[in-house]
Structures are given as structure tokens and as C-alpha cells.
Length: 204
Image 1 (cartoon, rainbow, N blue to C red):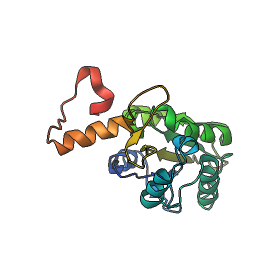
Image 2 (cartoon, rainbow, N blue to C red; image 1 turned 90 degrees about the horizontal axis):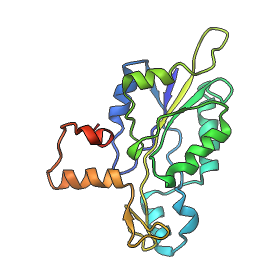
Image 3 (tube, rainbow, N blue to C red; image 1 turned 90 degrees about the vertical axis):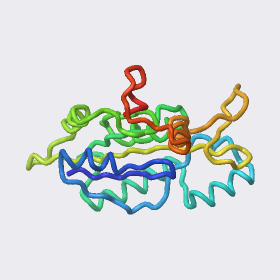
């Protein structure tokens, strides 16, 4: 059983990921949680402008522990628990996304890491097949996986989405940088599908 739970933010399209997983096993989509986890920035930015943008764009956001807790309740209805499954977790490489990944590590005794730029899976079918050999087997030899691909977006203290001021750096930077770069290329009609040898992860 593979249960795909993709958090879709405004700049990400996870249909590619669902297509990849569907080549390996039947996919069931879960839409039980119409909320997204808060980023690390949520703890350090408390301006009214930030809160207004967060509530407008992402109403119902939750701190990471509460998000994971509700997710576990939702997937348990499908027979998936931390004892009989593992999560295959992909977040962005950005440290801002690390608290959510760490929360899954805290809850699950085992996991498979597919962290990549923008949280979009870049490991290919061989890499994903490797992850699909880690779950506990039940008495019938059945495996259970919770596959998550989670991108992120920053909101700065002025409430501007897609930006975040990192400590010790001026001015605020684009977050997620990889998604913003892709967005700019599409807007400027400068997007190429050609694979660049020294930039494989971005162009895949």
C-alpha cells in the first residue's frame, strides 16, 4: 500500500510525483487534511502583516507537531501507523523546512529521506524503488508506505509571500529559491527542459 499525501502550495505541481509513484504501485490519494504545516519562520515572525498573509493564503496552518499528529490520525483510518509503515519524506533542502522533517523522524522509528530542491522528488525510479524496500512486513507480507512531498514558501515581516529575511543577510531573499527561479523562467518564457550537467537537480 502506498498512500500519497502531497501538500500543494501555490508554486508546486505534484502531478509528476504521482505519475512516478503510479508506475511502481497503485496510489491512493488522501485529502483528509486541508491544511499545511507552518514553516520555521512562523516562530520568529509575528507581525500583523505576516499573519494577514498567512491567514489569507494558507488558512488553518498548524505547527509541525500538530500537523503530524493530525496526519497520523487521518492515515490510521487506512491502516497505516508508525509501527507498521515508514514515511518516505521529501522536503526542501532549505533549513527552514527541517523542523517538519525532524518531526517525522521523532514520530517514526524508520523513514526514507528524499529531501531535494523545492521538496520535489529527484531520486528517479531506482531511488524510489530503494525506499520501497524499507517498510515492515505484516503477517501477510504486506508493506505500507506514507509518501510525502512537501514544498515551502516564505512570508516576510511585511507580509510579502515568497520572501524571507535570513539572519545576518540583507535584504530578504526569495523562498523557496528554486521554485521562485523556476517561476521567473516561466514568466520570462526562458524555461528550458535541457538537462545541464552541473545543475541536474534543478533541471530535473
